[in-house]
Amino acid sequence: MTSAQIVSLVIQASYFAAAVLLIMGIKRMSSPVTARSGIQWAGVGVLVAVIATFFHSGMQNVVIMLVAIALSTAVAWYSGRKVAMTAMPQMVALYNGMGGGSAAAIGASALLGAALAGGAEHALTNTQSVLAVVGALIGSISFTGSLIAFAKLQGWMDKTFRFSGQQAVNGLCFLAAAVLGGIVVYHMQPHAIVLFFAASLLFGILMTLPIGGADMPVVISLYNAFTGLAVGFEGYVQQNVALIIAGTVVGAAGTLLTRLMAKAMNRSISNVLFSNFGGGGGAAAEIKGSLKPIEADDAASLLYLAEKIIIVPGYGMAVAQAQHKIWELSQQLIKREKEVKFAIHPVAGRMPGHMNVLLAEAGVPYDLIADMDDVNPEFPNCDVAIVIGANDVVNPVAKTDKSSPIYGMPILDVAHAKQVIVIKRGKGTGFAGIENALFYQDNCRMLYADGQEAANKLIAGLKAMDGGGGH
Amino acid sequence: MIDGFLALYLFMLAAFTGHEIISRVPVILHTPLMSGSNFVHGIVLVGAMVALGEATTPLQMWIGAVGVFLGAGNAAGGYVVTERMLEMFKSSKKPETKQ
Image (cartoon, rainbow over all chains, first blue to last red; front, side, top):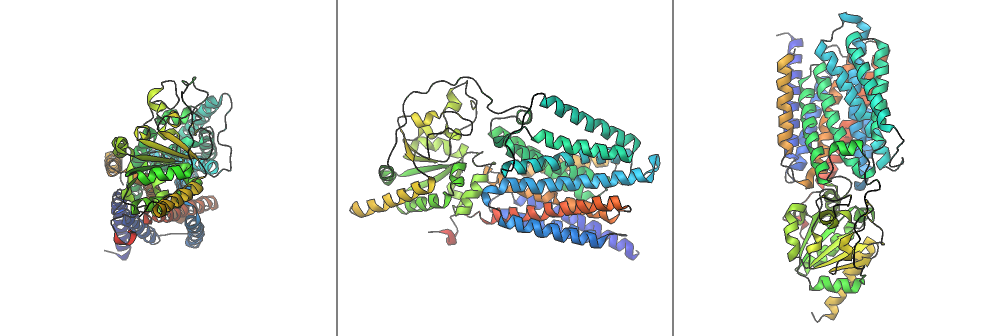
C-alpha cells in the first residue's frame, strides 16, 4: 500500500468511527442517567471526523478554513455559554439554521462546480444532481426559516405577519424554486443556480412569517429534521457516508420528535404550517361561578396541613424567574415530611421538555418531576395542587367544551385535586385567550401575586406556623 | 461509488435507526435531545470543509468559506448548549443533592 492509500484508509476509518459515536451518542442522550456522556461521545465523533478531513488529499484553502472555523467556534461557544436557559429554543433555532445554510452551501458549491465544468461533461451523476438540488432547497428553507424563527422568539420581530393571498404567494414561490431546481438539474447553468437559491431562501422566509409564537417550537423541530435531511442528501453528493448516516438519522429522529410535539399540542403539522391559531373561534360556553381570592397566610396553612402536594409550573413561572424560590418552597415542604411532586405538561415552556430544563437549572432533581400521563391519576389523592404560571394546560374546558379552540388538547387534571391554589399576577387569560374554568371551581383559590413574591410569603407563612404551632 | 439501491438501503436503515432510538424517549429529555440532534447534524462541517478544500474558483471559495463558518457554528453552538442543559439534570438519589 502506498502512503496515500494508508491516509485514505485512516480517513475512511475515522468517518466510520464518527458515525458509530454519533449514533451511540444519540442513543445515550435518550436516558437522563447517560445523557451527559451521550453528548460527549457525539462531540468526540465530530471532532475525529473534522481532524481526519484536514488530511484529505489535495486540500486547498486550509488557512481560510482554519480562520473560519476558529472565528465561528469562538462566537458560537461564547454565545452558547452566556445564553439564559429561557432563551434556549431560539438558540437551538439559530445553530440549526447555520447547519442548514452550511448544507445549502455544499450544494451550491457542487452545482456551480458542475456548471463551470461545462454542460453535460460535468462530474455529477443524475442522482447526485437531483439530491444536490433537493438538499440545497431543504437546507435553504431551514436556513432562512430558522433565522426568522430566532428573530421572532428573540422578540426582534412581530410575532405574526399576514396578508391576504399569502398562501398563494407562498405557493408560487415554492413552485418557482421547484421549477428552477428542475432547470438546474437538466441544464446546469450558473444563472439558473443563482435564481434557484434566491427562490429557495425567499421561500424559507415566507413560509415562517405567518407562524405564531406557540407553534414556533414545532417549526424549529421541523427545521431541525430538514437540516438533517439536507445534510444526508449533500452527503450523498459528496459520497461521504458519515454525512449520509448522521444526517438521515437526525432527519428521521427530528421528524418523529416534531410529530410528538404537534400531538402534545393537539395540532397537526400541516395545521401548524398552513393555518392560523385561535383566529376568532366560536363563542365559548359561559363559565358559571366566581374567582375566589386567598391570602398567602391562608394558603400557607393549607400547605401546612396537606400531605401530598403537586406543583404545576408553566412558562409564566420561568419568566418571573421564580423557579429557584419555588424549589426553596418545595424543600421546606419536603423537610416537613410532605410528598412533593412537579407535574409537567408536554408543552410547558416554549418547547416540549423546556420546563424540565428550567427546573433542573433551579436544582430540582429529575425524579421529583412527573410527566402528564403518570401524574394525572394521582390528582384525586392530592391534597393541594399549586398552579404557577400555567393556564391553558390545566383548563378543563379542553375536555368539556367542543366550541373551545383548545378542545381535545390533553391537559393536566388539576381540577380533580382536593384543593387548588393558583398563583397568578392578575386576571388575564392564557396564551390562547380563553377563560379558564378551573379558576371558577369551588375547590380553587386565587393567590394574586408575582411568582417569587408568592413563594417567599408561603415560605414565611410555613415558618411562622412552625413557631406558633407548638412544635 | 455508493449508488442506486445501495444508497437507498443506506438511507432506509439510517432512517429506521433514527426512529428507533428516539421513539421511547421521556418528555423530560425532548429539549436536550432536540438540541443534541441539532449538534449531530453539525457533522455538515466536514462536508463544507471538503467543498472549500476542493474549491477552484473564487466564488466557490467564498461559498465554501461561508459553509465552513456556518457548519462550525452549528457544531460548536449545538455542543455547548446541549452540554449545559444535560449537566443540570440530577437525581435526588445521589448524596450530593440531598438536603
